[in-house]
Image (tube, rainbow, N blue to C red; front, side):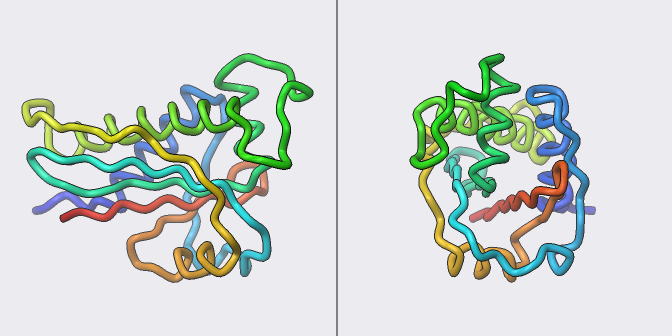
Length: 155
């Protein structure tokens, strides 16, 4: 039986958020996430080697800021939500980097070697978020009543 990339991403992302950011991510069905009306932070990383693909995580700015506070051990006042702040970018990029590494090991084992891109963090408008929400490649989470999306695309 072949591994299900979306199920592996659900398990890995929930585990990484719990262990790195002390946040509990509950996996939910995509249709449980209401239509998205805000701009979200989008972190994406690509990989090549034994297999190629990309993994992305999409967060509300406030959730991304909470992750940064918890991962970096800083005070909430040190973060600016009005732009992709370097502190937020660094924290969500590091979370994504760990998610990607654990995903690749869970999916393909510890023998294959992969090259990872530098994680890229940008803003994603509500239309792009809603398109992503409808994609079968997407998994959905709720973290303290805030939605988070994740996706993995292989090949």
